[in-house]
Image (cartoon, rainbow, N blue to C red; front, side, top):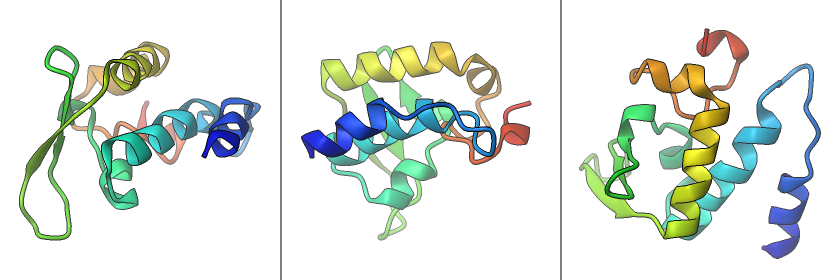
Length: 106
């Protein structure tokens, strides 16, 4: 896992996916350290991340029940840094926390 995280942390910006280098390190760590299914991480909305309490609200899961997942302090800090870098996403809480295209955050 360490080599996967290292590769993600070193991703360069990409014209086809301009935020990939910001999204992948955070998304992979959320999936791994919080025990999320890949679709649960991908489908997080910015309003599902509670920065004050350090928890995630998982809405769309296999059993169709909502649940809360706690984040460690270092994962929480990574999410806070990501939110600062991706500021436009956090201005509208209905948007995906991990947009697939630039047009989704404008």
